Every structure is written in structure tokens, then in C-alpha cells.
Image 1: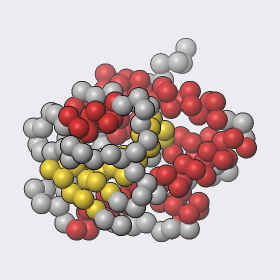
Image 2 (image 1 turned 120 degrees about the vertical axis):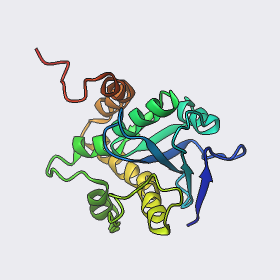
Image 3 (image 1 turned 90 degrees about the vertical axis):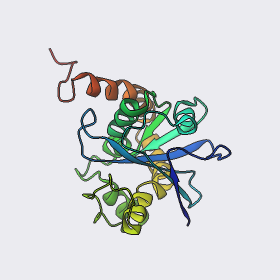
Image 4 (image 1 turned 180 degrees about the horizontal axis):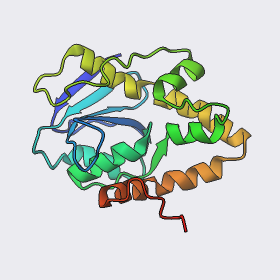
Length: 203
């Protein structure tokens, strides 16, 4: 496994393949308030590419081209947040997408534990550390522990998706999962527009 740290954008010649695991690190958990600091991506080959985003940066052409590419599936865990943050920072509508947290909620109805750490433990037998979850991601120079933590958030999403897809098919919930994934960028846009906690489908 190799972690590649880039400044500002992905390299021009990088091909992350048809399915890209994506995650982000921010200064907090409110997408319209807290700035984007880091975006990490993996093709599922064990390598992770991390892009450090500067404070006032509003463009990353190579990365946003990939995020909007209709031929590349972007794989998230709790994609609603990351999609909103990426749209606010770069003005990109990420699509198509898949969210392992949503897939987990659709098929692991026997538990309320749908965090990435829980999925790694149960589905893959891997224990990942969340020690750096609350960390200063806006630091000019990231510590090695921060880089390792950020990388772990995308390293296992491809394997988790494969297992969850099997269970979605078994429970006849593949179609509803896809419909939710298709709606996810719109749900993220609603968050940015001021409806984060309102169910607009209620009476």
C-alpha cells in the first residue's frame, strides 16, 4: 500500500479506473460552514491518492472531472456529506455515486451500527483506527498518522461494496438502493440550500 499526497489536484495522467472510492476531511461537520481540507481517493488497488486543498481553493480540474465523469462510479461511506462539501468547494455535482452506509442500512436491519469501523470489523474482519477522526485537517503539513487515518477511509470500500451488493440482491433491495444513490446528490444539494434536517416528503 502506498499513500500519494498531492497538492491542489490529482496528477494529469492519473487513471483511477471505473470505480473510485472517495472520502474527505474537513474542519467540521457542517458542509456550508466548514472548509474542505483533504480529499482521498482509491481505485481499490491498495494505493491511495490524497489531495490537500488550500484554504481559498475553488478549482481542481482533474479531480472534478473525475467526480463528474458519468463513466466512473464514485464510492462513498456517508456520501451525503462528502458530496455536499465537494459541491460547495468546487461547484461539482458528483455522479454517479454509491454509498456503503445507505446500503448497510438497507440490508443490515438487525443493527443500528453502520459506521465504517463497524462494517470493516463485521464484513472484512479488519479493525481500523478512528483516533485521528477529530484532528486539525487544516494544518499546513499533515502528520503521518493523519495521512494513514485518511487513507483507511477509502482502502476498504470496494470490498465492502461487493459484500453489500450480494446482500442487496439477496434481499431484493438492489433497485431501491440504486434509486436512493441516484437521489443522493440532490439530497446533498438540499443540505446546502438550508434543508439539512427537514423531511420535505412529510405532510
